[in-house]
Amino acid sequence: NDMKLSIELVNEFANYLCREEKSAATQDKYLRDVRAFYAYSNGNEITKEIVVAWKRNLVEQGYAIRSINSMLASVNSFLDFLGVSNCKVKNIRTQRKTYCAEDQELTKAEYMRLLEASKNNEQLNLVLQTICGTGIRVSELRFFTVEAVQSGEVTVDCKNKTRTILVPGKLKNILL
Image (cartoon, rainbow, N blue to C red; front, side, top):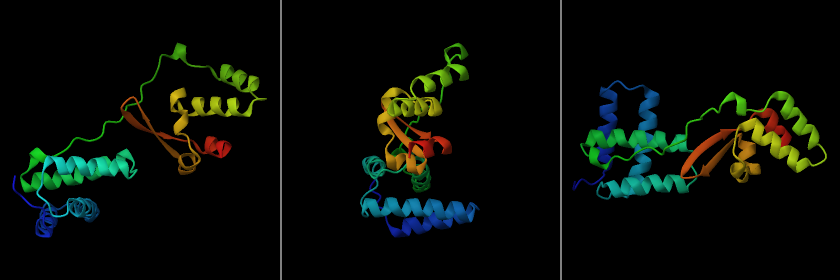
């Protein structure tokens, strides 16, 4: 490509977004993300490798998957604008929620019986409430840290897929 990233190119992109009549919020968001990418790239040549490295860096910094995918959309739009679409990167895949057959689900009565049976074992009781209240797998329990529960969302990274589990308020209070 032999195209070096420069503040001039970022400014041209800002003008382009304006001409395209993007909302002020969209312009701000895109430019914030593109400037972050520019700072990361250190004014180097634009390559697919540097975009992939930036994506990896965002993951390592602990950004939420939705946030990373949103930043990638901004930068991919910038790369299209520059005519280097071959440098664009894919979003991080997240798993869609799949629902199981009803005959495999616990009834409310069965769930209440399990909670009653586990009432003398606080840890088991909380594990059951967590699994039943969020639909996670047993292997995903280890991602339920104090910090994650406090934030109300737990990022689960299993089987090469990352997904965000929302922790209902009531469960959050019980666990904390």
